[in-house]
Each structure stands twice: as structure tokens, then as C-alpha cells.
Length: 164
Image (cartoon, rainbow, N blue to C red; front, side):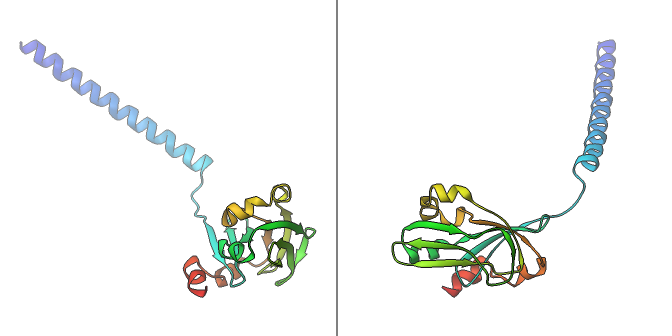
């Protein structure tokens, strides 16, 4: 019996040593990979709005923003039937990005900051109903922001909803 207890205790000690060694090795491996593949840095994607009923999804690592119209804008316009995009290029605050035609009226989407218009969502040209179904989930333009600080001036979701 004594021999059995002694062997059992040694087995437990060896098992614990192996577990500690495995855990230490795993930790060191993860730590090495984390510094190699995922350097520590913070980043965020910000959702902002304008009083002109546009939403901006801004990525502060790339300084790129996706722009679209809000659900409120879409409901005020009614069913959108056509979208016409302007050509990509450098833009200043207030320049038109596109023209949206609906059953009620025609409206333009303006850029709320200086930047470079990189691309337009061509899928919207093929199926404008995407905007009618999910305006705040359908981007119209991708823009490189010239002055990232201007994003802070735009409205938060709460501020936008209060302004309605």
C-alpha cells in the first residue's frame, strides 16, 4: 500500500510538472506570436452623422470613411429609383458625391469634410432597392479623409436622433 501511495504521489507531481511546462511553453508561444503578428495598438471604427441625414463609418487606422444616407433620409425621400455617382477625385466640404432620385424628389449627398473620393458602391447602381431596404447598412462612397480631426465634429447617433 505504501508503495502504491508513493507511486501515486510521484505520478501526480510529474503530471503537475508536465502541465506547468506545457502551460509555460504555450504562454511563451502565444506571447511571441502576439508580438510578431499582432502588435499592441488600439483602433476604432466610429459611426458619425450629419444634420443633412448622412452617416459616416470612419476607420481611424486607414483614415477612410464610408458614407451613406440615414434611414430617416430614405423614409423622407420615399422609394429610391435611381442613383447617379460623381467621378472619384479630390473633394472639399460641401461638394456633391452623388444624386439620388426618388418617387418624391431628387436630392444630393454631400461630403462633410475634405478628402479624396476613392470609389462608389457600384452594386447600388444595379440594385437601388438595397438603400430602400437598409439605408444605414448600404454605403454609397468610400472616401480618404484629409483631416481626421474633423470626424470629432460630426454628430454621434444620440445627437443625430435628438436633432430630428
